[in-house]
Length: 168
Image 1 (spheres, rainbow, N blue to C red):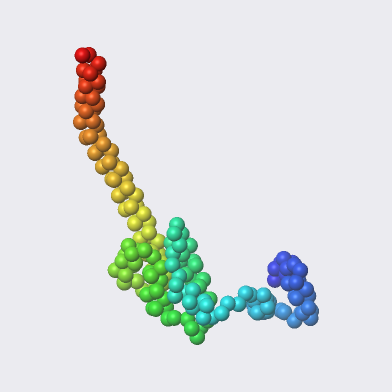
Image 2: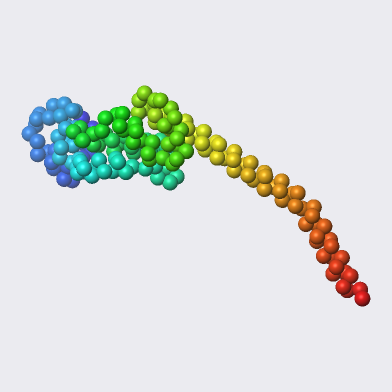
């Protein structure tokens, strides 16, 4: 508790020094007092709206989305907070169609299980997509190599035509 107090500066330090000596005796009491005074408070309906519209950002890792989802869900005040079962229905809605399908196909008991499954599914989907890209590249290379023979013949024919025109 003393270490934390040493990190306080400016207005926060003045606020803390305004307490009478020994009025805060536990870390829990310090935390409660500190958060009551300095925590940024959001409108509960704004937090609920954010929860209902939360989506994974482009390029965002599943782990980061899970953390963001959990923070928003836990910020919802208790009297507005959806039941965990409803949160498990809402959680997949933040993903692309492949991920939603994969998560809805499984019967998972807890939000933690669902988030761990999402991480696993993401790894599988990324692997599948990279294999598909690699196969596409090899298919294009094979097609181009099969086109190389006729292309070379056409080039040879054009060279002959050029040479024939030069010799009247």
